[in-house]
Image (cartoon, rainbow, N blue to C red; front, top):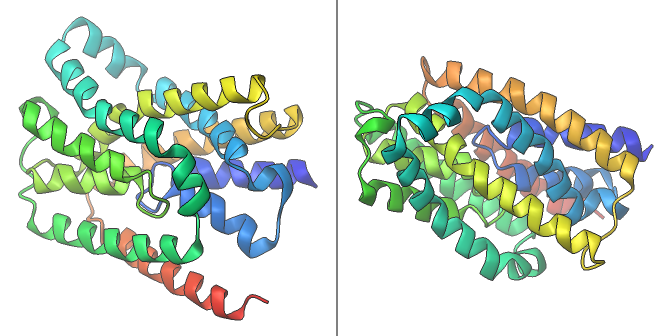
Length: 259
């Protein structure tokens, strides 16, 4: 039964990591609604699933990374700068967030607030520029927004794509920069918690549960990245805004109805 739960959670992680709907929120809410406990409902398992989405990022953007290192060092530098705020926030606030900010009420509030931000960014952003037009100050702004995504319900892709839109980027370009920028953050988080698990400082995860979840999140992640980039080349963020609002309503209803 735990293997099936792991696969389902991997699919949820793979899709929601890249869609602007908050993967952390869904990884908390699915076990909460279904009454699942144990390793499935732990921070260690959440991080384990991020290994699958990290692999999907590396595979999908392999050529992009090669080009960044060989021919686009300026953009590579901007990505490095944008990574710093989230890395610092993750190092300093990880335990505080795990202990205090995984409440359904906080998730519901974050879904609504960032949903409004996404709506405004999509309507007011000029959507004219690409990644090559970014300045150092732009990278810093997007990086700070990524740090805010440590709060469950915010969504790393949602807040960083919104920041890119406010800075005048095209939707697809903002999403691509967001995904490239998230690669070292996701990798660093997975490495940090992996070391903690090996040294007995984090919850133990059954190897088969781990493998099943990672494989599912990898496949789902590849599908989600490809689909979202194509979607944003033609359509706005409005669908995801409405989804976030609907999910917040469901969460509040669940809080009142859940025994």
